[in-house]
Length: 352
Image 1 (cartoon, rainbow, N blue to C red):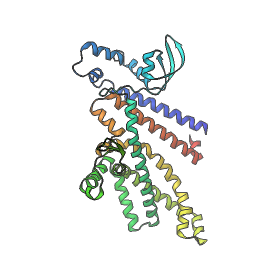
Image 2: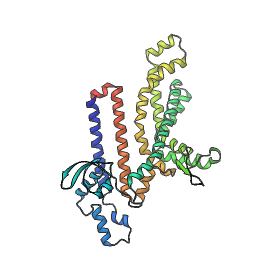
Image 3: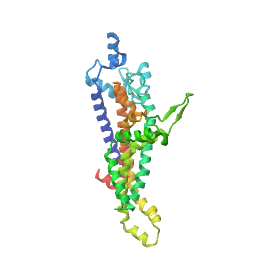
């Protein structure tokens, strides 16, 4: 088991190094960072100073190593007051030449537009996105499992066929398209009846300047983001329940005179939902990625909104930091899911 976990962690680290490499060379060279930082009226001397500070006067390979050194939690830096303030590191030990091996939070640099630390901007934006992702997966789980069980118990009926057709339509719809439809219908046309807004934030500020939680603004984005998972969970649940219903122990339970409700609750669901719940856990990372366009549609200021806005403004440190953060979340969640697979099914460990 330890070997299995170690392999998964190493695979995740290799993936993250690949993401860092791609992100750096994808964004590097787009625009003039010094101009984007200082504006178009900056003098030549100031531009050269900023280029030197950002390492843009060095070869591309050296720039990449500098960026890698910034984002790695264990890295090498000159041990001085300026770097201590900049990176807020903890020194492990000196390695000569005034340098030291340090441990720190990944330094994602500063925004070209606001001059704020990218890490601070991401920490503010991740809370609304995390709430949106969790709300959508909870919504998808409840609705998906319920409809999946109903479809299995009503196999080949009109209800079963209707649920299956609807689930196929749900799988085929991108989240951003579903978001537009939901915002138009429930947030605009039926606003007087639903009380829902087609745009809105998780935290709103009232007329007195007080910040309060607005959970109703989660409903439409969470539903838009959860439609595709709902459709897939419906089909997984239906298939799994039908498979369990055909087992001998279920027929034995019926033969002993147990009620249908007791058989479904005690025997069928307990055994049918294990693969479904494992699959659901793997959807969280995908939902975080899908939140990007949904947040733009609903003007919901989370990580996706921050990233798209940064791209529109050519604020590349923010865009790069957001992509790297999303990649870390995706890799960590998938490692956890792989480990869960290995715990629940030892055959997975043997194959790897």
